[in-house]
Image (cartoon, rainbow, N blue to C red; front, side, top):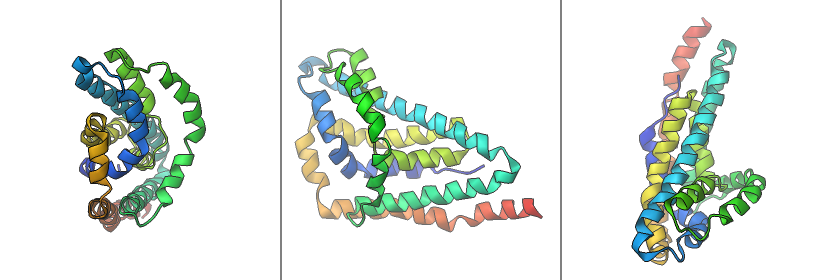
Length: 230
């Protein structure tokens, strides 16, 4: 079974705040505007928890899909391919966050058609006035096309387990939580901080290093597979 570093996915979500601010800033602003003052923070937490729940659901589905193929003995190399792909995407994500490449953003076009159908449903829960509205708005928000999310989903797929896939996306979602909570409370101030070139470069290179380390560890997976073939 492939190992997926929950810590690396958590930190990828945390350090991906540069992208989160740019990708979700407008949507967060739309959901946060006109929130009742006395319930503002609980409602912001509510729609973020809904978003993380949708990530977990997607991770469970991706893990189940991975399990269905990895159970077949003659497809064992698929596990290796998915592991390599997941780490290459982490490197690409890091380069994007560092401002050195835009390749990962092309993944966002994949979900564009689906999002056009989801967006009107999200509008029905705006403006947010209750925790129920906040939760469902967050659940729908979680399907916004996002290169960071798709990168994490490949790791969930590579995990080869619905449980592990859900945990991968939970770790990633929790990593994004601090940035998006702050964005909901003080978008303008956070945007100024995250746009600093040094912040972007350091965050991006750290994320890319996760992918490089993962590729270096590829020998851990080659040895068992080689023994299986003998």
